[in-house]
Amino acid sequence: MINDVFPNVNWDSMWEASLETVYMSLIAVAMTFVLGLILGLLLYLTDKGNFWENKPVHAVTAAIVNIFRSIPFIILLILLIPFTNLLLGTMLGPSAALPALITGAAPFYARLVEIGLREVDKGVIEAAQSMGAGQGSIIMKVLLPESMPALVSGITVTGITLVSYTAMAGAIGAGGLGDLAYREGFQRTQPDVTFAATVAVLIIVFIFQTIGDWITYKIDKR
Image (cartoon, rainbow, N blue to C red):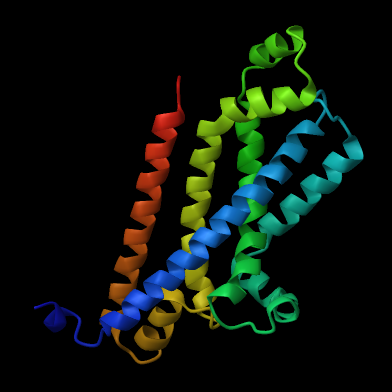
């Protein structure tokens, strides 16, 4: 029955492409979480009135974040081809998409981190300071735990964005469902392959969203 609906779909290839998409997404999400958290903390802490207030550092960090956040991903992919070739020796395959995926998503997530940190009640920070807590202790034991639901929600949104980025990366040979939909579906005029790849992407997004929502619910104590 399913072969009648999707006559041109090679399910082994579809499964392999799905695994490549999940691989790219998971590695990129993990690296984006780390880099975005660092950038977001830097944006927040160096801003006016915060622990590490430093106008030049804040301005430079904000400029870097805004510039890379504003570059369309498909253009960023092309711009980073020389760097990717230098780093990995190839611009083809799932791993070759990672530099562009991380570079495109980390600044986006950094802004979400900054927003999450700004939502932390100032009274909680002041209470920790009055009890003699140092800056490092406040960051690790107050700021990050209090903002964690927002940080997890933010990385969930970013993860879903990364899944869509992997589809675009597939158009220039990165593999995954985007590559399959483009080569087998579009170029060979096999709409059932494109549709099946789209459904697979939607399933991955749904799983990402469900896991992210569940973790947010579990750690949100409000």
